[in-house]
Figure 1: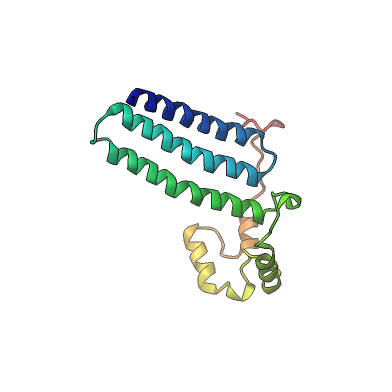
Figure 2: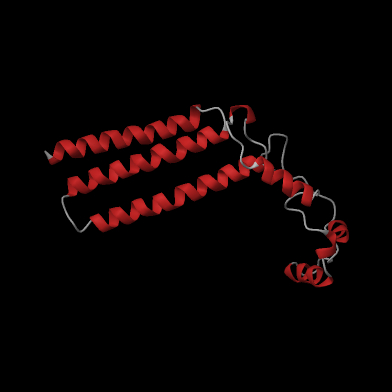
Length: 167
């Protein structure tokens, strides 16, 4: 009976992981791909680890399998959140398929507050100490960005037209 339960868990878990991989390749936009990469993959891993635990028939491996699944359960949503946030901020999403856009009002309010961009540093916050700290990071380079660009000299292109490095 345990062998049948193991086979079912391993087969269904493998199919869920396969579905996640196919979804990553076939879905048209970032948010759909992100969903395909997280939901079935985590559930597929749970089934695979359950099947492995049933097949090994040892209580000693249960904590290790549980820790492996918990780490996956904790890291996958965080990485999906970061990918979704980056995709939203760089406008790599299809707004016509969104049913509700909860972030639209937040992004508009942030844009009105800081018209130069969310990540831009206001000029009054750049201090002499900050320029001196930047100069300490790269010794020999001027603290002023314009003079740093001129001190670096002309840009040298070490690649051919295909992007392959030249010898």
